[in-house]
Amino acid sequence: MKKQLTIHYEWLNHWKELPDTEHILIEKAYEAAKDAYAPYSDFQVGAAVLLEDGGIIKGNNQENIAYPSGLCAERVALFYAGANYPGTAVKTIVVVAQGDLIAGDECVSPCGSCRQVIAESESRQKEAIRIILVAQDGKTWIFDSIKDLLIFPFGVK
Image (cartoon, rainbow, N blue to C red; front, side, top):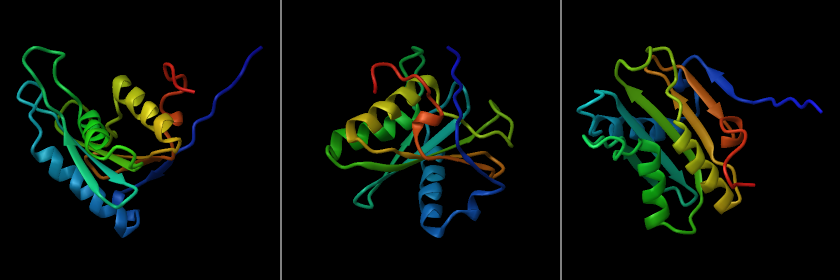
């Protein structure tokens, strides 16, 4: 039996087309990217997580010379939220990046490990997490759930 999967996302020319309430979250992700520790890749990634109570958690990539001991911005933010605000749902995560590893008009996309962590976060809270990915030139992709970025998550229903 053959099956087909379809993903759903929204594409905007610039993140400023989003509601003003989401501008703050994107600006926080850019703030986080500025403080990334990325001496090996020179690729700064920032993430901002909006909690259901309105709180915002920032995370950035933390590289380490003993690769792969570093951690991505998305996991830094989500793990901090889980450790410090257990039981508080994550509503949205924004990811931005600055550097030459990807073209300026391409959205940075969470790696497989980060996608799996987002999937487990959704499963744990029994609620989808909105994902906003912003390219260096402002182009924006919006996903209503990790299910459109990770179709067969490990161990998550």
